[in-house]
Every structure is written in C-alpha cells, then in structure tokens.
Image 1 (cartoon, rainbow, N blue to C red):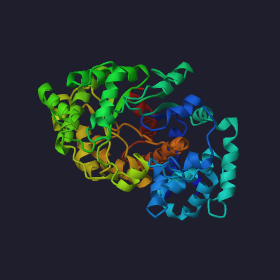
Image 2 (image 1 turned 135 degrees about the vertical axis):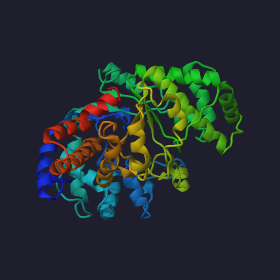
Image 3 (image 1 turned 90 degrees about the vertical axis):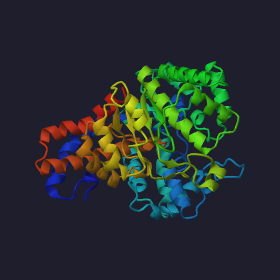
Image 4 (image 1 turned 30 degrees about the horizontal axis):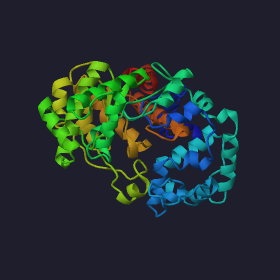
Length: 469
C-alpha cells in the first residue's frame, strides 16, 4: 500500500471512493477543541528544544511503553519529583528510544511518530538504532530554522483554533500574553479550557490547600460552601474572558447526584476538616457535576466529561514522577444510571451541551450512542486516550452511527501534549472517516455527494459548532 493510501480500505472500489472523500477533508482547517499543549509554547514562541525533549519526554504514550519493558522514565528525560537525577542529554535519550523502536510495531504511537517525522520534518530515513543520530540531527537542524518555531508551525498546520486546558488556580498569564499579541481571547486562535478537578476532587493531593487558593484568587471565602460556589463562578467568568468555550471534568465515574445546599455544604465541610471518606468524596464529585451542568446552562460553557480513568494506578510512577506521566489505567464505566439524575434535570435543555468520552469501548453501542440519540444535550466525543487508534476510530463509527448518527458526535479531539503530532492525529481521523463513508457509498447506503458533505462536517463544521468556536 502506498503511503498516500494510508489507512484506506484495501478493497479497490472502496479505496477509490475513500481517496475522493478524503480530498474534501484533507485541507480543512484543524479545530482542536480539547488538548493539553502548554500555552507557554505559543505565548513565548521560543525555538523548540532538542528532538528528544520535543517528541519523547512529554509523550507518555511513548514513555509508558518503554516503562512496560523496564526502561525507567527518568532515563528518557522525564523529570522526577523526589529529587532523583534524570537524563537531560537529548541525544542520549533519543538513542535509548531508538534502541527500543521495535516495541512500537503496530501501535498508534509508531504511526503518529513516523508521520510526524515525514510530514512535519521531512525526514524519510527509517528510524533504527543504526540511524538514530542521522534522524536526530535532521530534526535538530529543522528546529533551528525560523519556519519551525511554534507559531510558524501553527500556521503551517492550518490550525484555526487550539484549546489548551488549565486549572482554576492558573493565573492565565500565558493566555493574556497571547491575547495581547492578537492570538488569544474570545474568538482567538488559542483559547483556554476550564478544568476544575483539583478543586473539586477531595481525593486530589492538596485539595483543601487548593480550595483556599481558589478563594484567594477569586476574592471569595471558600471556608463556606456558598463562597466556594461563588469562587468557581468567578473563575469561570475569568476563563470565558480569556476565550474559553468549554469546561472539562476528569472524574473517576460518570455518576451524578442531586443534593440540596445544606447537604452539599455538610459534605464540603467534612472535606475541609479532613474527615471525608472515599464515599463522601465520590458523592461530592457527583453533586458537583450537576452544579457544573447548571452553571453551563447559565454561562454557555460546553461541558466535557472524561470519566473512567483509575488515576495514578502505578503508585511507584506517581511517587517518582507525579501525575499525567502514563500511570493511569482504564476501568469499566457506567453511564445510563449514573447520568440519570443530571439528565432528568437538564438532558432535554438545548442550552446544555454535554460531550461524553469513554475509556470503556464496550459502552459505545450499549450506552453512549443511545444516550446521544435520546437527549438534546448529549454529544459523543471521539474515542479517548488508549482508544485513540485507527482500529477503535473505525469501531467507534460502526458502533455509534446506528443509534446516534453522525450529527450527535462532536468531531475529533487530539487530546495531546505533543504539539507536532496534532496535524498527524487529525489526518488519521479524517482518513478513517473517509474509509467508513466509502463503504457506505459502495454499499449504496449513502450518495457520494452526501458522504462528501458529511466528511467535511466531521472534520471541521461539527467541532466548530458544538464547541461554540
């Protein structure tokens, strides 16, 4: 198969149709409504560091695979939190990565990396231990050129909007700089997203201290539940002023719970006193999802829910390196009963937009598609995290289209910290959608002109509309 036909169906008729459909989507601007790129990269617009620090160190898809074979993240340049030394020489990190390149055979990570090497940096030499230095030097030479500074690449990648993700405790200074430079603010090209987990989840390390800091930033007394809610509303207002159009919630479950103010205040005060147990923390998280849905109806932020990750399951990794370095594991997640209290109140209110993601692929057909097909407020997010692969993108379309159609899905999200992988990931999604639609056309289930309109909707129009961009 030629690289031009990457991920297209092998059957000749469908492949030809996929090529034609893909041509409609290929050059559409990128809408990236959910991701974790550090806004400092674009605010400062400094040259990227060496290839290892750009491509390997921040990508926990890469480092966790090597950890599974006994290669410690510290040896791959991942900073430690316990004062232990970690490798800081980029070439050494790169060589170690290349020595274990075979571990990535057949994985989405290899696909993204190879496409990044080729399409972003123009490097066509196959990576291997023998070619490690050659590939490293070629990428390093590109990074020294002005055309490979972050903002120049942003333009080349044809990104129309990029959403980063910040906590309510962030001062949004990087976004202020972007706005001053004409890149941020409402309607800007780089916007923030409100992610309040560290002030909502009582099991989050330092929760009580975080809540106190929230009060200081917002000018509210978070010693009371009422002051806490007021502080969250104020921070949402600040995020909206900085361009945010959505919030993001990474709860362990999708369970929701309706409490009155007295009941919620009792739980909150237990947490502040350090007396809340695991059940109390879960009930408070469940209640706060309902509160945030109410706030979303009031202020217009699209609400994203990412449940189902057993955070920091690898306790050694967390102790050594902290959060978000590949130590999380998916777990089974239930949506139908869990979301019922929230949906009973707001599920038919078109002012609410609730985008659901999952790590539990079994829920695609059984729960998520029927929910999106049955409530005006619910949309389906793209397959998330470990499921962000060609095979699962195909299975997602096959599983959810029957019940939810295309237009109750919210478009692709790259959910990445690796800036240079953004165009590659979106291209993979567009190719998979071209192949899926091509089969419908070949089976005479969808006219070619409607398929062409649909693929542009999936790639561009739907995420732009649903995330209010």
